[in-house]
Amino acid sequence: MTALEPFGTRLRHAMDERGPLCVGIDPHASLLSAWGLNDDAAGLERFTATVVEALAESVAVFKPQSAFFERFGSRGIAVLEKAVQELRAAGALVVMDAKRGDIGSTMAAYAETFLHKDSPLFSDALTVSPYLGYGSLKPAVDLARENGTGLFVLALTSNPEGAEVQHAVREDGRTIGATILGHLAAENAGAEPLGSFGAVVGATLGALSSYDLAVNGPLLAPGIGAQGATPADLPGVFGDVVRNVVPSVSRGVLRHGPDVAGLRVAANRFADEIREAVASA
Image (cartoon, rainbow, N blue to C red; front, top):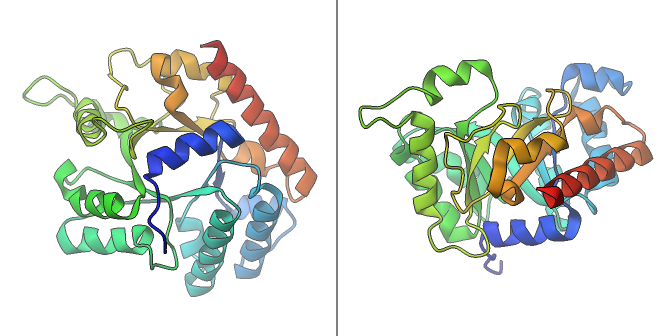
């Protein structure tokens, strides 16, 4: 396998070419039902194949939620493996939303599962949790650098429970969230046009002027669509770094299935609205 360009470089090019949109692939039981599918491995396979058929050649980034595949055991993982490979073959980037976080050899094994070039689940980036200490992510950081992949580290998430950890203040006066952002800025120092180590920052959080989001890396922003945020909200939340935002939409697009044309129209509409919001910032 030819060595990949760094993830940040590939991400910038993909968003410039295809538009700044990430579509989350979250096959909830309720969504399968809405599509007229059974909540089983066959329904999962049909759902996923339809999303790939509709969007793989036009959307820049996909974020499959691993849990919704894992719940069907080996058959679900097989569906996920096939989807990852087909999406990447179509020129899209895949961010595996697995939120892994552990220490030592266990963290290394998680990294190898999703970031090693020979893995059947090899993805362009992985979501990870730093709450065993940022240094616990070192095996994933090292493997990502080696393979041209990236990480999205949970920093300022949109769930209300996250605040009790992420806004907690350390002895040095910085919050935990700010500390994570500082680590990412150091990882990305000197990278052009964009670093490969990004943060997860909710689009529903409102103005974040008290946080320095200029980490020279991508900011994965869930929350647009069903969770209440809109593309027009992005400049107010992210300010000067809005061009580095990877806005993630799941149900806002997927609810238009199983009609392939409907999925394409919805994805194109979100991409256009995000592009306009970024351009006006």
